Image (cartoon, rainbow, N blue to C red; front, side, top):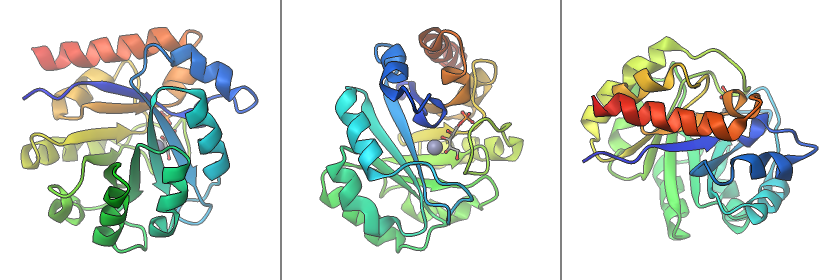
Length: 220
Ligand code: DX5
Ligand code: ZN
């Protein structure tokens, strides 16, 4: 089974004075929209929270892919569901009970993702691969957009893909049109891209190019 390729531009790199205008640029070409929520505790940065996510999910038809980089995800599932999240990803390194958080997310009838940072052993996520809808392999240390990809994280992808052939595997951090092909070949099928998309002159063109290159790479 070949899983469909999806591009999920990260709003973190959009212009916050004009989120709506930037989202409109990729509305017809991207498949998902990625919302990075940071609490200044799990990661050394604070981004935006429930009110911003709520406003933006109303402003777009794109599938709402919410990435929680927060210490206590369990406590915030319901507010983000009410804000329009269609998939909530939380970190295996966070403080909340993992199975309880997965169950809470599923109890609202939405999808659940589990994320791991580049230096975290993949053994930490192995017990949950058949309980989640998506695995997020971080390809940079979470906290900031615009960082260079950590090569070690790419090495995990083939192992994860082999362990879970039908699971959506997302990568996040440092992904661009030049490296997407080789990452797709390693087994990822959902690609977050912040600066590569919103830092470009023509974000829609970059989204289309990234999707094409990933599809081409897994063909042959
Ligand atoms: C990093 C975030 C990413 C970030 C990616 O903590 O999780 O989603 O926006 O940005 P780029 O694509 O610029 O590395
Ligand atoms: Zn993210």
